Image 1: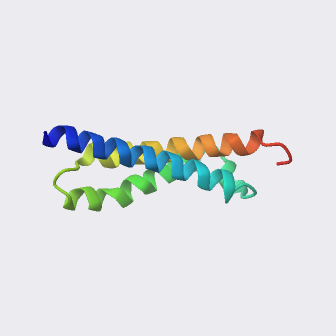
Image 2: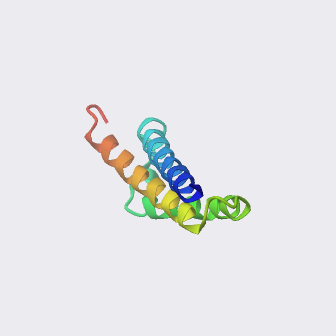
Length: 91
């Protein structure tokens, strides 16, 4: 039962990271050139992983895989948000 709960919690955290980072890049960083580069998703994903590492270290239910999944989802969200920005009319 604990394994299922940790899997669901990790999936919810990864989903939230993706949705929030995509919306942030699309809405707030629309005109920031640095957010539109090819390196931005890798930098954002690395920073998110490093920021999540102490949190998952403290919580016994979550593990290192959760921090990695969160970082990957933030990186994918940044990449998709930048792509959405390039495809918006008037941008």
